[in-house]
Image (cartoon, rainbow, N blue to C red; front, side, top):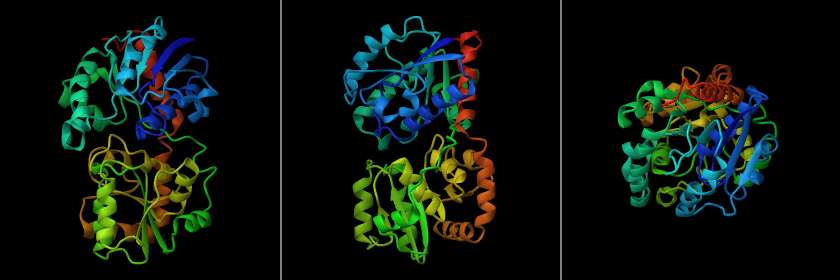
Length: 373
């Protein structure tokens, strides 16, 4: 078997958002798509194996003695223990968007997006300095780069000066078990206080670019009769602003903030919802869109970044205009069966095995020299 070491030391379970899910799903997909071809070893922080039994059952996970919440400590471990563990590997895959200063070649670098260049004001000064220093140099040193969408590929080419042949799109994929253990709708309604006839779900961390404020504006203008919007996601940099706006406009009964959900509750909420609403202004992919489609939930998304590419004609891609969104949400309800059928067909192109096939093809090309340097 071809030995591949995957650097996940940056991935504190439950703290890094969609990038964690993206890598975990595609690594499971490699195991399914190319059985016996690759010997995958994951180097990760303490607690990673317990958080992802679906991986630990399939491949070796080597955990650090720390949780890796400290960036300086993680950088030190990448330069020492990771460098030792990757010796002799056919490919070292760095999934967090940067390469260690001592990176064992050949290296595959996953870039999830380059949001920091387009929206620098959304980042702390410390993180912005780190990304501005490390991402361009990492891109220059990597043997090959993987990205989740054609949109990210184009932006990496344009903004970081990378030749297109050095980048491969590895699509996000959804596991076939999605929805199999979904929490029942009546339990979620009781627990979260959902009483309206129509429910809209927005599973997203409250970062500024996720644009929760647009949905608050929609609710504030009275365009959503007998409707509740459920915000499900961790507390991001705009969390206090979102809570303050809900309080200031008296929207506490119409907009429910339920926090980060486990998989069962997430799936149950999407199954309960009349539509997934996704007004984000920047996405490298937008996994909840495909998750909703796979579960038969109509999608209304913004026309920003990668979302039009991912949604295709299987959902409604709408400019960020209150009137346009109000009408689209009504169509999602009245034309539900049509959007469900379209969405399920589209989701069939984004399975975890498809993501695994994409990644396995990159590993294969790198080991034969086709993607090097």
